[in-house]
Image 1 (cartoon, helix red, strand yellow):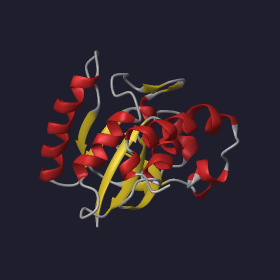
Image 2: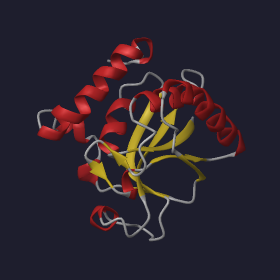
Image 3: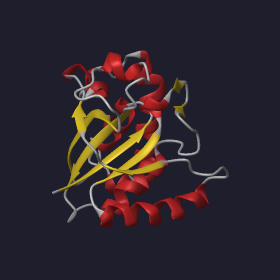
Image 4: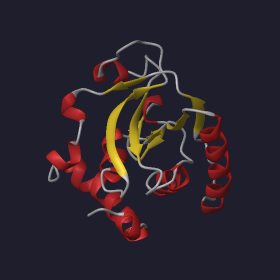
Length: 174
């Protein structure tokens, strides 16, 4: 198994999509890139800790490659908006790829170059080495699957899942 660590706005959105990707063993919402150890959601929400909301994706590279994980990432969020996704604003919602090793860094750089062709504005996704990943509180895990009719889930997350299912049907599990 390998891991990818990605931030693209609210972690509920990213997690919900990767839970539906064939070859993904787990997708865990959490925080990375900040200064405080073991931050809470309330602390991260202030923007003062420097953390981003991220998802740790554990996947089987024999079924889905890191490059394919990134291809999905570019399709499910807007990497051209600095510190924002839709109505979610602040550095905690930044677009970011944390890499675990040099191979991932190189693959991410190549992926950014390819993805730029799909966007009119420049991609502003941060690319940084992983410092530490902190899983979010239990009530954030599997949020969409636990609350599919909640307003944010219905209005924001469901369309991202639908877009993924249409564009990547061959990679979807359900």
